[in-house]
Image (cartoon, rainbow, N blue to C red; front, side):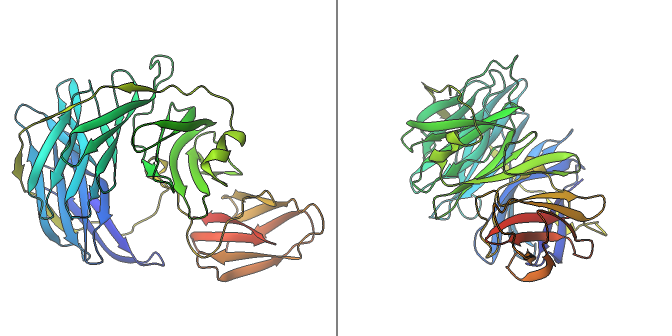
Length: 404
């Protein structure tokens, strides 16, 4: 079972597909990647099953390996790689987990641009797990999900892996409120403050910290947090799954999600949320160096996939508004897609004169079709429209529509 890589053009057409595998036959899961330049990219992955391991690889944009490395530690069952980032000097930082029996520890690694190890350090906090990594010019910020206490911790380190500060983002009684320990991406807001979010499968908490570790503000909302994105205007967009808050939820393959856009992070507690006492505290933390052995035994080949079909995976999603169409934050109309008959119901809340014409546009703002509006409820047949991301525009308001 190999990890799969797929390269598409801007219209979603396949350019190439590759698989990554080795002789063990273990499943390989690609955890994260970043594009270095327009000529290469880096990725990290982890093996699962009876033969554990990890991989960092640089590839050219044709999918050919430039170099690859794996790392093993004496007396350790495996090292998992979860996130990768590149610094301005081209060195590479990796965050992950070191697992030994029933114990585990967050691990940080720094490599040069050719994959040579500069240092590797493990976290001292009990049963820690670094699920994400964010960097600026001088600091590393890690999201740490602990498996024994169910805490989520935000930690800062210098470029040598030394701990600077750590804050508990959320303290929970894991027996009453099981915490989702899966990866949740850290984000910078427009002022370079750090946003950390976590969920207990029912509701989620977004917390904002300064880069010095001071807690600034937070809010809670229904649903499982999946991502947050900030825009130059100061607005931010949230992606939530489950029974989620939002302007509108859409059901795909029995999975619910909602994207909501707000004027600013500060406005969030006053819209769609309830008062909640956020728990956070300062803790002590440290790191220690460990020894690892590098190896290389992976191969890349043409993937054995005759047809590649898309499936929306909520577990690995991010929020992004694409194209030249600006989504308006309002309730001028609502979209209710019906996947069973390829028709979309529109409920228009014009509050006055109805617009006479509505439009369906592609991601670049080009008109795909238009339709007459003669009442506040309208059924639009989109069965002839190919799959993709579109915008439904009525008057000055527009909303994203995903057609699968």
